[in-house]
Image (cartoon, rainbow, N blue to C red; front, side, top):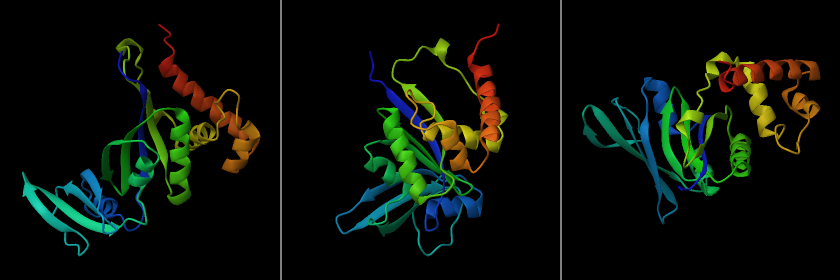
Length: 211
């Protein structure tokens, strides 16, 4: 039996001063293979790969292969980036890339409590933090895997269900009730329940086998 845990995919609007995010927005190209290493001099060295020639004073080319260039830049370790915030919680990152000014992070966590803590810490510093995907890693029966098309949800429906999830509305026992979530979203209770009911119905349609 393999080890189990949670695999999480998350998107974060890249903050100002994040070259990887800025490059993806400026060039329209996907920035991939983002890595970093903390040195003993108080600096963090980061590298990323992109299919574009950059004219930026804050990044240096390292090498080029197959039309793609590896770039490097340094920053102060005292101001942790989104990637470091995740790993400082003890969740190893599996993949980091940037597209259209948004960071996409894939990482592992042992339980939902740690995921909630990471989301909370990121939202304290950054805008546009979204949980895109959460699944159990380890031994999984392929017959029980379900693909949910998130595009069926409107932006508002996603916001409602993600906020409710983040506040513990779906926990047993609940750590937030419907009124709490409605207040957080600055909407009426009836509007919240309507959006949530529609969103849950769309998600359940993909999960429940009606054949």
